[in-house]
Length: 263
Image (spheres, rainbow, N blue to C red):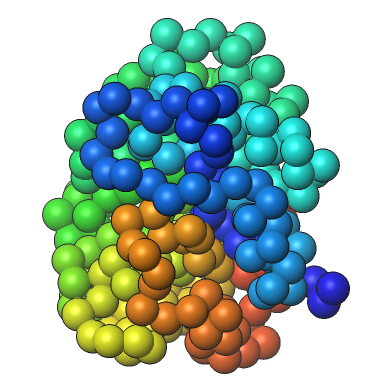
């Protein structure tokens, strides 16, 4: 298998009898077991992946941990711990392969930023980061990044702006990338594009972020595209578009992923 590095944002949805879904979930996810994820990686010739805990499991991270253990080191994870979790609980997750936790500041549910503050010192010491889903057109990114004691930050889906937003609409995020203050995932173009595949408006955002600093950009597919029957553009095509856009900067992106997740 030709190693093209990391897919930095995927999900695993296991057997519902073993891993019951939250009764308050906001959508019905597809069945997406670990074996299917590994098949996805093999088809794209991608070596490793970052499994992000989906909201449909609430604070129950057992499906994530099971997938990490079953991947035999091929995957790392981003968890959404119960707010009452102790540092010992987080240490158990770390040993399984978790490297950060996620706050969704766009949709209700999950962790709020305030609920994570008590873990920040531990996170910085353990090499964890804080993955945030925000709307970069509405969030005061400079104030957010100035929070005292904040761990390293990774932003989902190019800042998840409204569909059709141009690079000027996420200028504060681009500036933060240029200043080396944040990483951002070049992922899920169909969530932010107002155009059909190949989503040229989303690619314009990716280009602006890459030009700001490729060492702060992460490639991801958002497999299995939890709220869609299938994405408008195949994952292999998105990979090809980003690799072409990155050119010789692709290795810098992979170095960034390795630094965040490789331990």
